[in-house]
Length: 143
Length: 177
Image 1 (cartoon, helix red, strand yellow):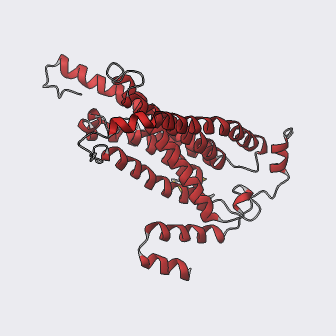
Image 2 (cartoon, rainbow over the protein chains, first blue to last red; image 1 turned 60 degrees about the vertical axis):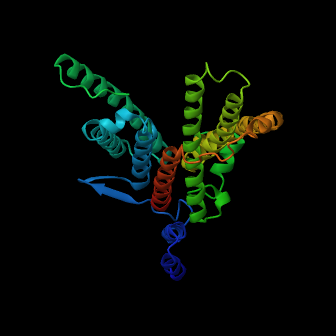
Image 3 (cartoon, rainbow over the protein chains, first blue to last red; image 1 turned 30 degrees about the vertical axis):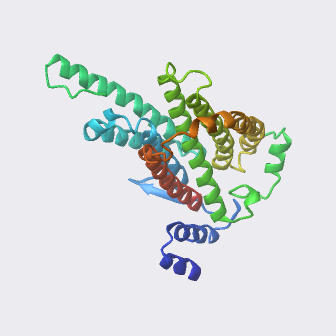
């Protein structure tokens, strides 16, 4: 850990994170017999941390990069985009807690739900436009 | 469980490491590889989607073998090669699980099968580049020379954000597994 702390002081982010992770792994051992998968607890449920991290990352990155540049997304960021993302993240967390997948399964689950979230976003966005057209509310034109 | 394939047998009879044994127990190396392969796959898919979308949007303007179409084709070929190669590697790294040798062997065999296709994309990208170079260089030697490099900066910014989150996720997954 001496080298890790001295690199931390040098300020190189990449160089700082990696030794920390290496230290975290080195203390546990490299084979299945010697390693202890971290188990996290949430509201009394327990699940593998690795699967949860993978699922949340998959979901977030899918939500983030599909259509992140679209104007619609910027327009409805607080009313639609962030709630839908939160919903997708919550559903993937719930599925990880119930299914307890391996990291790859968690990643696929999260990414799939993130992509589903895009469909929900599109539906909700179309619904909003329909509502505003029916009630004559001043529509903020998409695209 | 019957491990019929040689690949599955080698995993089942191997040292049962939590990451592929070729990492030799070095966790930091697993983090770097996992992060890099995932980032490359995400960025590659992003570039393919963007370029094919552009190609479709401007298909009337950029006719076949116009400089813009060739430039875009080279980008698509390189991005496809990187995505296939790194995607297969990312799946086999994320999915490594000695307790399920059959599935892990499936990822490893799939990687071997995808690799030549990925190399095919990369090499045809190089060939299209070399083939089109004399003509394109001639087209490009026209004033004004300096290109505005920062027009697509928002997209590169998104790539960098994805890269940051991927590194964090890789560290998290490797250190808690």
